[in-house]
Structures are given as structure tokens and as C-alpha cells.
Amino acid sequence: MLLEILQVGSPVLRETCKTVTRFDPALCELLDNMKETLKEAKGAGLAAPQVGVPIRAVVVDVEEGYFEFINPKFIWKKGEQTGPEGCLSVKGKAGTVTRPDKVKIIFQDRNGDKYSLVARDFFARAVCHELDHLDGILYTDLSKDVHDAED
Ligand code: CO
Image (cartoon, rainbow, N blue to C red; front, side, top):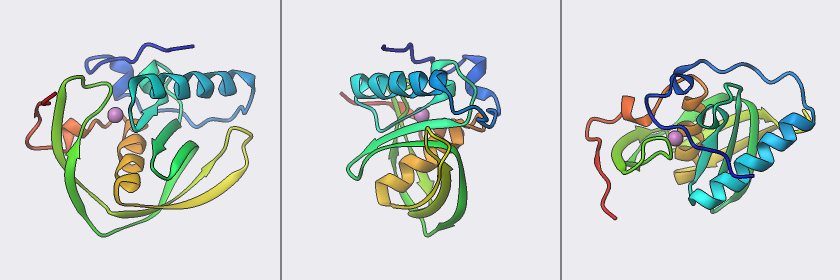
């Protein structure tokens, strides 16, 4: 099922999201719907608060593949990259953001199993952007040149 993607101004986008403790059918349904919604929107990532659910769950779809990160946490961040960013909750805008260019995270999957992962380049940028959503941070808070996107 396609979910409505909330836009900037929605209070839930500014919440500190809650840790997921129940790895149940409701979580699976939410993740399936977030995956479908992300594909339809042709985005690189979507966080649960963007669809109105303030829990620590994100989906990411990049060159490296499709990923679901539940309760993700950074282990380390290295280097720096500066580049353009947008957000499905800030329609029609883009802005330059400086991010780490390599990150290691730990996370759980939809079954509650624990994993770690190293992401580089654009994947690292997407991970940082999505994890920020779980703490109520939007890329527009970090960019000095938010402007109308061309296209
Ligand atoms: Co976003």
C-alpha cells in the first residue's frame, strides 16, 4: 500500500523517534509499505516518521541494493564529502550538504537480528540523511544553499 509522505511542517518530522521493541507483523507491514512508497517516489531513502510513524526504522534504495535498518546506530564516521541532497518531505528543493564519506552502522532487520554494515560515498550520504530523520533533523537544517530544484 502506498503511504502519504508528510511534508516539512508536519510535527512528526521533528520528533525524536522511539526504539523499535516489537518485531511483529505490524512492523513488517509498515516496512513493506515504506518500500513500495519509496520505489513509487523514486527516492533513495525513506524514514518511518516521513510516513507519520515516529519509530527508528528506515529503508534505503541505492546502487548497492535495498536495505531496511531498524534501530540503526553509528559505530564510526570517516572522511568528508560535499554534494547535493534532496528529501521526499521537502518537495521541489535541493541543497548542498557536507557528510562523512564512510560510515559504519549497527542495526536490526525486521526479525530483530543484529548486523553491521559499512557504507561509502552516496550510500553513506543516504544512511546519514535517513538516520538524521530519526532524530528530527532535516537536510535543510544542515545546508546553507537550499534552493528550488531544477527539473
Ligand atoms: Co529525507
